[in-house]
Amino acid sequence: MTKILITGANGQLGSELRNLLDERGIEHDAFDSKQMDITNKKTVDEKVNALKPAVIYHCAAYTAVDNAEDVAKELNWQVNEVGTRNVAKAAKKVGAKMVYISTDYVFDGTNEGEYEVDAPVNPKNEYGKAKLAGEEAVKAILDDYYIIRTSWVFGKYGKNFVYTMLRLAKDHDKLTVVNDQFGRPTWTRTLAEFMTYLVDNDQPYGTYQLSNEGSCSWYEFASEILKDQKVEVLPVDSSAYPAKAYRPRHSIMSLKKAEGTGFEIMDWQSALKQFMDEIEG
Image (cartoon, rainbow, N blue to C red; front, side, top):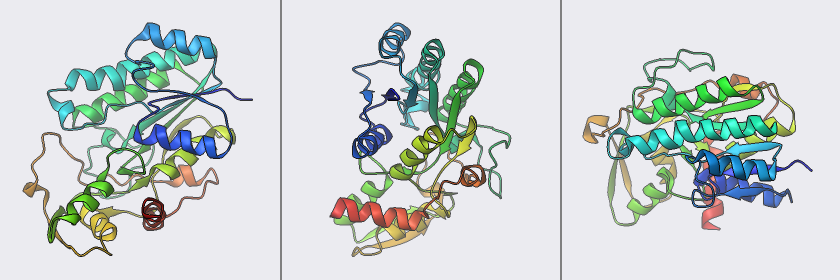
């Protein structure tokens, strides 16, 4: 039986992955930040060495993008770069494969077309820079790794855009949502399934990009989320919502490499519908 270790056990993706493995009857060890602080190298080494997993799904991350610019700048780097380096080094010692989740924010969002896996990176905010540093650490330390870049993540567990829109719709007649930032929404279920697919099917190691099929603006995403609600959704440009961290305007990543593995990727509207049915069920 392949031994599996999951970091970030209680996060949006870690929770989804645990749920998926439970459904499949697959045993795993999962740790949250209290049980295994990834920024503490000694703790990571001890846990990983004691369990000797064959696979580490590294879901732990610092994701508060605006806070990463100032009040949590150090924490962002500690978790996303130092923590990832610690996990990669521990994986190397026990011969474990590592799956690291990265982000579309490694790109600057100025490309009009899709970003291929090997497109030049140019992160413009602290979160993107730290996640890219995590990618580089994984590549430098390990041979047996999968880096998966994703974007606009939503799912059953934790905070995300879908829950925010549904909550706001309860006590607003009108909502304004930015219409000049474009990307691909990603259901955590699809992402978790792809993570396990790469490992279980011995796909070539390297960097992949995974979201649901299709792309949209945040306004189009919100309109789809709220299409059955009694609320008017209006488009605005991003100047209406100034943010501390730079947001890529057009960060649509190519899914060709992921599709080339034979993994079937659902379109984002179908993924959203399945998710909504699940939470409303």
